[in-house]
Length: 57
Picture (cartoon, one colour):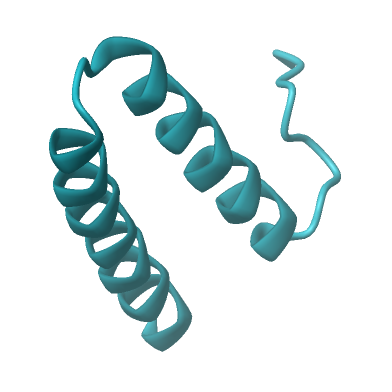
């Protein structure tokens, strides 16, 4: 059995951690405040859609 970093954690905690990591990565990769705002907004919208889809399964 392969161990994972998310094993045993509630799904919501795993999802929140993924969103935070994505936002931090975007902040590191982007150069302008405007670009950060745009990418972060679309990233959060995408994450919310994934969470909603996951909750309806």
